[in-house]
Image (tube, rainbow, N blue to C red):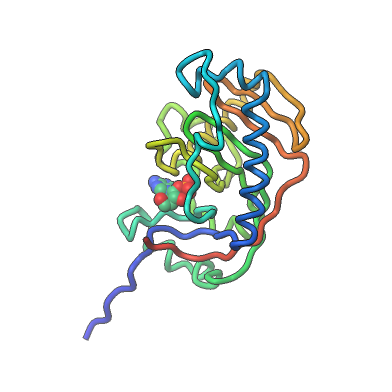
Length: 223
Ligand code: 2AM
């Protein structure tokens, strides 16, 4: 009799260990608390609220995801292109349940998402699917995304505003990186954690002075 095919997960990724999750949440929440009190941020508040005078509490504005992670491959239980091929890669099978350390080098805040940019190591890049950076990217943005180093989309979603899907974090991150490459940086503010840059339309990028590292486990996830 033919064996049933193993089921494919919703996605694969590096999951932060629970204690690491707490540490990262605290550090990043402190940043949000500071950000919404900055004059530079208040000047652009309407891009978050739609009104000039209103204040915004960013801690309330973004909803926390259940488990902090960095997605490598979104499989959608096999419906996503290349899901089966990815799950069958030796490097994927060998990496499952293994520990790994992620390095966060920047934070992004937009009216849609709050996220952490992850700098992948060469070894981690082997788990990054070919073409993952470009998936679902608007045609107009494709040329600039193709000019970015592979793995530029790697991130941890820290929060989404109401009604926004987490897939948006990677897309907003790519847009910010493309704008930076074109030299479209606006106001810059020096903060304890690093340099904060404004990139039009409510987009903020904090380049961390010191990367924040986090211990993770590579694993698959199904709802
Ligand atoms: P995220 O990686 O930006 O957080 C389950 O939905 C997980 O898969 C989420 O973590 C989500 O975004 C990611 N995800 C959802 N749809 C995706 C897609 N089309 N491409 C890549 N990642 C996706």
